[in-house]
Length: 344
Image (cartoon, rainbow, N blue to C red; front, top):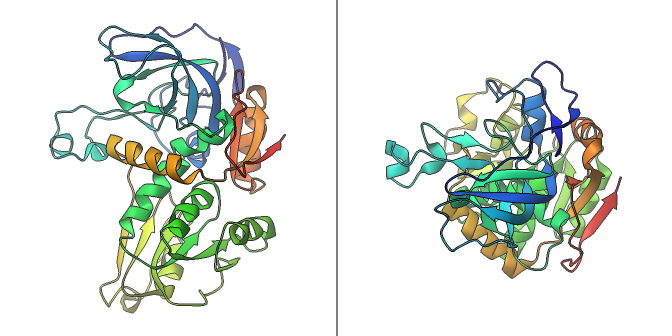
């Protein structure tokens, strides 16, 4: 099968023919239709996340169809089902975290597109217990960002509690999905983008933001919570300055540059800083139900599999508005209302 490989020495992926995977016990063999290009993929190929599997097929926002089921797979999945493969690929089930239903913090996890081969390829095998059914109403390319951007955004929003005035820093793939859920919950959303990123600001306003502007600006109103999706540590004290007493700053990325020192006065008043780590299967099922109910408008920039390096470069350089997605196999054309797609 065709695959894009990361060898650990260069951020440039290499197109190659590799052996087809075979479904083992409890696994699904999936013919991939699309795979999202996530900022975590950039952190891996840019060497910011240590100890990936090598050589590695990146990608953890995988949408495809079940081609075969391995021994012991329960009846929840059948050949032909459209399924998604998220970042969380496996948990041990035995550590203290798994036993208290915090498998996202597992001591011996495995991650799709990092310690397990991912979706920048024509086929993948995945643990059936961590796969998700994809809601009807989304094309394959629109559904792909749900598998990480959507899931992590959802968990970050849950960590914001009942916050009514919500600031979102870094208006990319995760932000433009979670904002739609926040607006459905009647929260007021303020969107903060890179300075000068007018397309992202316009997208935010189009999707219902109360205000959109530069991350260097103060929020026009005091925030109850801030969600930070940009991997920029300097945004943490900036967000704290805009959060009210008792508010929370949620850091949604797996990697972030160092957070600079800041005066204790910014944290005082029972303000909190928390991080999001991975997700649980319960998160996945709950979010997919929301995705079915809401039918999110997904903004995608679509690239052929062979142009994965260009997709990564565009994401690195800030040239992606919404989510970048690789189209791999036969594309499912049924679309959600308001799907926003740009082919590259």
